Image (cartoon, rainbow, N blue to C red; front, side, top):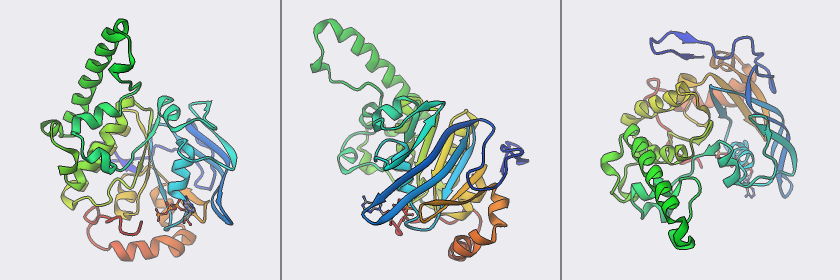
Length: 294
Ligand SMILES: Nc1ncnc2c1ncn2[C@@H]1O[C@H](COP(=O)(O)OP(=O)(O)OP(=O)(O)O)[C@@H](O)[C@H]1O
């Protein structure tokens, strides 16, 4: 359960059963029988998973539970061995990452080395939909391309402004701090105007001073109608902003529920939360995962 602008608790999943594979009233994403093995190791084996539209859903689990693999499968960056899933009622099976993004479901990526050498603005423009070089076009199509470019630039500036990166638009992305890079990763993903964004460890390597600001951006996305699914290790972050939590262990969904349900789930506490909580300790939201476990 998360809070509204006045800090009051809001249950965005009223009546939803806190059990693995539970049906949601308005699922934006539905997956069933999704399996992926690497050699003899079953990395993902998800019988059923639904993500409620307009919520922040956390995907948690111990190292090696299959969280990143599931992200990769759902977003078209890896191939399933079996299973199917649909997004906004449309089957996404076997679509490439590019097509999945165009359908409205994007995931963030850490900036690659090549991207860190480009300016912040160029990073944004490269993430825009329908990228094509001017050289590929005949003279007749140039005005269309120029209009596209102008619209992309305007959208990039709006997003950079929202994420407080506009003053850095001409800086090399590699010069940004860890937290600013996370903001840029989010801003890049939003260039395609997605209905759902998947964040892989948004707080990893982020200076504690920026954690609250990042959390604010994530809840603002949800409040603007973007569905958020995120993988994170920091339990204070997870419990603080999630409307719903899905627990993965050895590739399977072993629990689902509101933060209070998950805290009260003995199987999850014994297998995962106990150890995590001992590690994080301090003030809620004050600790960050360094990403060193990856
Ligand atoms: N390309 C691959 N080739 C072989 N094994 C892989 C590959 N990708 C993932 N695995 C294995 O699949 C299992 C699930 O890995 P995955 O990275 O999805 O877990 P995770 O929950 O994201 O873990 P972490 O929290 O440590 O990031 C692990 O045992 C991992 O070693």
